[in-house]
Image (cartoon, rainbow, N blue to C red; front, side, top):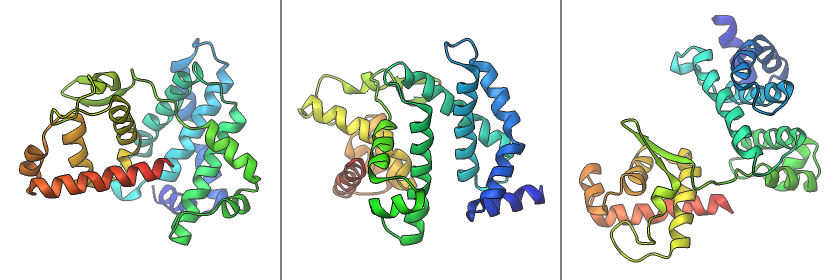
Length: 245
């Protein structure tokens, strides 16, 4: 356990050998998960490679302070990566190389953001990855997740809510008229970027956008005034929209 924790710390500090060793020692998890997705019309090796991307993401994001078994954290990440591939592959074909490049670019961008304290410029990402500006743009655009109106967006007490269920008839959450296009955009933005919010902000958005509570009801649950809820909601949506640009 101490050896694993030390390797994980080294990997998070940028030690490529430690990261590669963690990947190598946990490939069994990928094999186990990949077997569940055989006979889906895709080459076994291709499914395995996609699972490896999920394993690498699990290593990069694993938090030692959680005192959680790595396999418990990694298996859902690997499974999710393969499922996204199988789901999206039927709509937009993205080569394995573009997928891998997109992940490397995303990881480099996260690392640079931490180091610089700001969003890195294209030239800085290029220097860190060795990819040209054109390759970065191509890989980033190719890996943008395709939205489906039949994707699950929220689950509570065993009931799954689909995006199409939230589109509604074009009316706002408080019964006010709202253009359908704006409503769909808001829900897509919230769904994709919910993980970027703090706990209080996330709770506000879940109550408003997924439990359909009014601003007054949300204010009561969060111990805020309706005006404060309104202002915070607008700021959150604006920030999330900026992330989508």
